[in-house]
Every structure is written in structure tokens, then in C-alpha cells.
Image 1 (cartoon, helix red, strand yellow):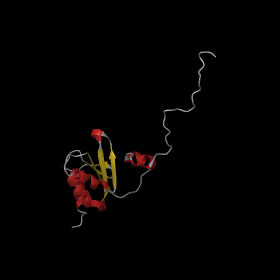
Image 2: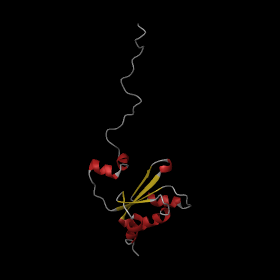
Image 3: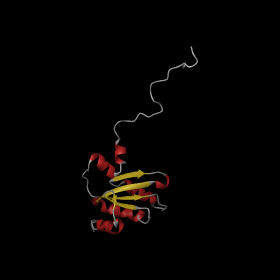
Length: 137
């Protein structure tokens, strides 16, 4: 036996590569950017929505804000570390709950208001007060 020949034969698989599924999971599809999702799969009809995106805020009632956000139509956590954000989507029929959550987290300059998943001008100053008109008195 020559010294150049190996003493064992390696397996014919590419370890440490992970065996990934060919189709994305539902969680991966939900995490896609809305513009990318529309480009890949076409537009999906859904009702008008307002989304609040906010970081962890140093307030005593932040746990209540998270509880309210988790009870929204759609709740997601994205990012990590300093970029960790909470996303809570509300339909127009949830105007009262949207207002209650915005009163808790809206004081932060890092809180974003998205209209149909897109930042629009005057979302805080114009769109939110218009939605408040939908709250029955």
C-alpha cells in the first residue's frame, strides 16, 4: 500500500451543510418584505391595515403594551439586539385597540406607523386621527 492512498473512504455527502426543505415554511413566507412577497407571489387582497412597529420601551406599562400587541390581527417580532422590533397589525375594525396601543408606545420617536405595510407621509398626524373617527362613541 502506498502512503498516498487513504486508509478509509469518506462518505459521499456534504456534511456540515444543512438539509434545507425545497419550499419555504409559513413562518419564512410571513417574514418576507411585503414588496418582495408581492413580486414573488402576486398581490393578495386583504383589508386596509395599520401596523405599529416599535422597540422595547422603558415604561412600567410596557408589558401591557406587549399584551395588547399580541392580541392584534397579526403580531411579529423582528430583528435582534438594538434592532429588535415588535410589529402589530390592526384592521380598521380594531380602531379602539389601535388607539390604546398607540397611546402606550406612540410617545417613542422610534415607533413607526405603516399604512398597508408601507411608510407614508403624515401617518401619525393624519392617518391615525382619521382612523380614530371609526371608534363608536
